[in-house]
Image (tube, rainbow over all chains, first blue to last red; front, side, top):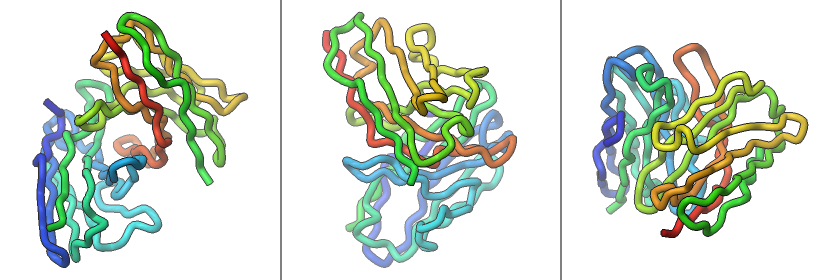
Length: 111
Length: 122
């Protein structure tokens, strides 16, 4: 059981918008720790997609956006493309565990 | 260009030891905290261990505490993970990861290696 809770899977057709949620608690997201998102394509290294709740590293398309409110966060992908099919993970820090924590991951299927 | 190259993985019997290494290049190694993150087959990402830039602070996930030891050699731009008393559940792809800190409440993992596979047999 992951400290951060994500839906196991989401799907959408090309061009559509999908949202991946990340639910935490008062010892991580609710305590004010930022959420970060990673994209993990099979056979490759995970890639930082969103940092500090909503910031995109250089090179990440603006189709990817993030937000956080209280103990919950969301990753939104608009204009879905076939190459977006991947596993997505949220990550934060947990003060009770004194450790970085990941969500269980969400598999995005592009129909 | 930031590069993190892991090595040292392999097939090992339960109860034995293994030492992972990570060679870093393309950035000022001693300016960053470093971590190991693993992914077991069919599972998600799991933080294993982290070490501060000067080795003054280390941390471990509950599943490896007391068995694994993280260390670094800033002179050689290298990160290590000594894994003792290995269990079958330690079977995973182990990633060397750089931490970037933004402020007191925010740090992420901005660069990842390709990983080294550790397989523990019974």
